[in-house]
Image (cartoon, rainbow, N blue to C red; front, side, top):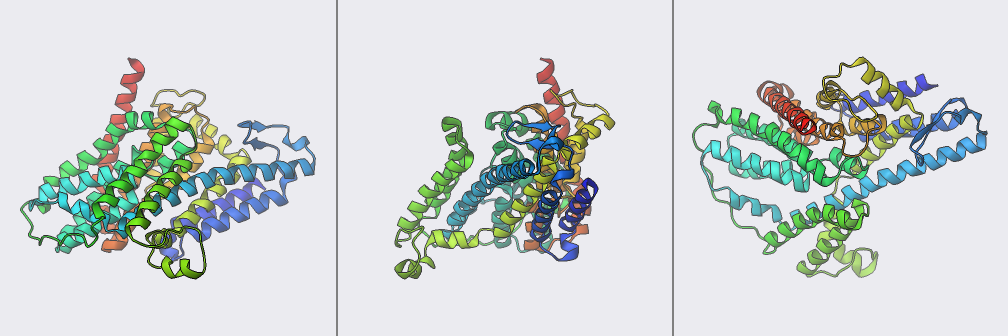
Amino acid sequence: METIILVVFVLGYLAITLEHSLKVDKLVPALAMMAVLWALIALNVDVFPSWYDSAKQSILENFSLLGHEEKIHMLEETLLHHLGKTAEILVFLLGAMTIVEIIDYFDGFSTIKGYIKTRSKRKLLWIITALGFVLSAIIDNLTATIVLITILQKVIKDKELRLWFAGLIVIAANAGGAWSPIGDVTTTMLWIAKKVSVAQLIEHVFIPSLLCYIVPTFIASRMKVFSGSIEFEDEAPSKSRHASIMFYLGLGAIVFVPIFKTVTHLPPYVGMMLSLAVVATLAEIYSNKKFSLTEIGGESQAHSHHSPVHSALGRIEMPSILFFLGILLAVAALESLGMLFHFAGTLNETMPKLGTEMHATHLSDIVVMLLGAGSAVIDNVPLVAASIGMFQIPMDEPAWHFIAYSAGTGGSMLIIGSAAGVVAMGMEKINFFWYLKKIGWLAAIGFLAGGAGFILLRNLVLNA
């Protein structure tokens, strides 16, 4: 039965990876895989020799001795536990997405255009990528990419030149998202799962991420394509007089979430809901519409079309939310059977130990770098979800920080390897092989430079 479950998982994984070839949204195989896996486990619960007790964080070797009703009860408790942990991530993401859409409703991101004054291609490259690196750490790498490419489309008319800028934005945005707990879905997962803390993540991953962004950008800036200057017309000011206020308020509200968690020790989604409530309140006031988040029918419906909150909720990416639900619960199915832990042990026994030995699990640097390289081909969300289930390493061990870096930045090597890359591909119609030839090698150099920087800094700290 374990073999059948692995086959279902692999087939589902392949369908997700081949999303563009199959022309089927990846949420479909993710949801189908999740449902089929848990159905197979429920129908054959008596044949499994072991079970992972989520409450005790340990493998139950005597699981086979339990009665059928006890096993079903444990399965239901485990599924409910994983649904709760997954819901924490999804509610957090829903709040963050809604705040970003509210900012966009007021044209808040037009505030960024004020930073662009230069006509030099080289200087513009550094400004745009620096904005990508910083913004992605606050509003996530996907949104930062959308915002900056939208600005580029209004600033640069040359299509070929814009492709180069877009490629470097993808690298910078992914690098910026890796060192922030709210900058990338994978780092958010590690943070909510209590594998990394905010301070330690920033301390250990910021410099490697900076190297990952600066090294390829510096190399690109010396290339002929970024020499000379461009001509563009100054954009008209934002139509909304509240644009700047909502921009800074929204960013401040998102940054407030880690502070709220540190002070209260409550899950991050609680702070995100508080931030959303504050931003939504001012958004409704500024829009001069009726304040209502929950009422339906009558006058509320008459105003809902124009309400910034209702507009934002209607624009968030529900397909992404459902994909995360499917893939996280699918990985949880393998974790519950103890399969991920056995795989982790085999993986680390067969890989050479180039890195330092970690507490409880000897996690090779090669394993983590391969995980990063794999995220360029396979979605990094299930890779990190599997890592969380596989490696029983204490919070803030260097291995978790390295996983956050590798999974967050490795996807830049292929245009389909990250959410930022996929959205850039769609917005600018970037050809897969063009990106691989022109940008992929720059991303690889940045990934290796940051990885080498992480290993060097970690060894210096451990040997101090």
